Length: 394
Ligand SMILES: Nc1ncnc2c1ncn2[C@@H]1O[C@H](COP(=O)(O)OP(=O)(O)OP(=O)(O)O)[C@@H](O)[C@H]1O
Ligand code: SF4
Ligand SMILES: [Mg+2]
Image 1 (cartoon, rainbow, N blue to C red):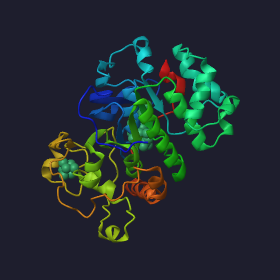
Image 2 (cartoon, rainbow, N blue to C red):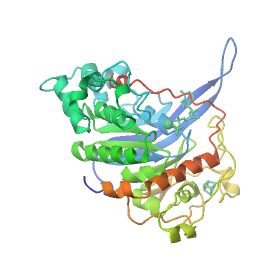
Image 3 (tube, helix red, strand yellow):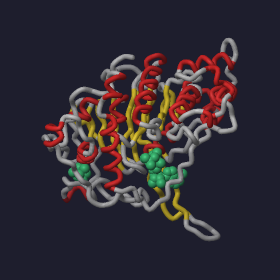
C-alpha cells in the first residue's frame, strides 16, 4: 500500500461538481398538501476529485453529506448545478443514458446490515452489478465473484452463504466487493466504517486504500469523524448546513485550519501527546444547529460562530482561495494559533500498524462527543432510507 500523497494537480478530474444544489420540498399536512418551503440540504457545493485520490467530506449529522453523495450519483435529483464524470456532463442524462455511466460509479453504504438484501446469497449480491449491467466477465460471474471475495478478504467458499452469517466487518467487505465488481473509476463511500468497531474500521480503511492503489479509484469519502477522514483523504472538505466551509489538502486542513468551524471540530479530537493536549483548547459551539429549511442569512455559521461580527449576518462569504490549494468561506479566517491546531505528529493513516495502534479510539470518541454536545435537532425529520444496492447500476 502506498503512502498518501498530495493530490495531482493536472488532468481531468474523475468527478467535478459545480454549484450543486439539492432542495427537498416541505409539504403541509392535510388532505391537499402544498409545498410550504424547502429543505436546502445541499446549497451551492463545488469540488472535484482527482483519479485515484480521495476527497473526505466531513461535517455534523444533517449537514448534507449523504445528499451530496446521492445527488452526485443521481440517486436523488439535484435541483441545480453540474456533475461531470471524467469530463462528461451527466447532470441532465436520462436513466437510459446513465446506464453506461453507472458502470464507472458506485456506492458503499454506511450500514452493512441494511445495505445487503438478507434473502440473497453473497454470490448473488456481489454478482448483481454483472447481471444488472449485462456484463459477462471472462470465466463467468461465479468465478469473477469468487475472485472479488478473495480480493476483499472473504472466503470464496462462502459464495452461497447469506448476509446474516457474516460479521459487520465482513458484510462491509461484501458491500465493497459489490461496489468494485465492475472496476468503477469513482465510488461514493457514505460513512462506510461508522457502524464498525475501531479495529475493524482500520482494516476496512486499509482495504479501501489498497483497492484504490490497485484500480486507481477516486473516492468521495463521507464521514462525520475528522479522525477517520484523515486516514484516507488526500483532500478534505468541511461541510456545514449544506455549504462547504473549507477545503484543502489533508496536511493543510489538519495543520493550518482557517475556518472557525474547522477549528471547533479539530479542537474536539484528543491528541496522544499529553503535553500538547494540555495546551489545546476545546471550542464549545453555542446554540443549536439551525434548520436547513430556514438557514441563517449571511454566513450560515454566524449564529454559532465565536468570531462573528456584524457583517457576518449580512454578507455571505464565498468559498475562495486563501492560499494556493486552500479554500475557505469566511470573512475572518483564523490564521493565528488558537490553541486548537496544529494536528500534526505521526500520521496514523500512513501504515496499517500505525492506524491500528495509533490514537484512533480516542479520536473517534472525540468527534462523537462534539456531535453530542452541539446537538443534532434540525426540526426536519431525516428521511434517508438506505438504497437497495443494485439500483445504482440500473
Ligand atoms: N428525502 C428527503 N426528504 C426531505 N429531507 C431530506 C431528505 N433527505 C435528507 N433530508 C434532509 O436534508 C438534510 C441533510 O440530510 P443528509 O442525510 O444529507 O445529512 P448527512 O450530513 O448525511 O447526515 P448524517 O451524518 O446524519 O448521515 C437533513 O436536514 C435531512 O433531514
Ligand atoms: S464569516 Fe463570520 S460568522 Fe462566518 S465563519 Fe467567518 S467569522 Fe464566523
Ligand atoms: Mg448521511
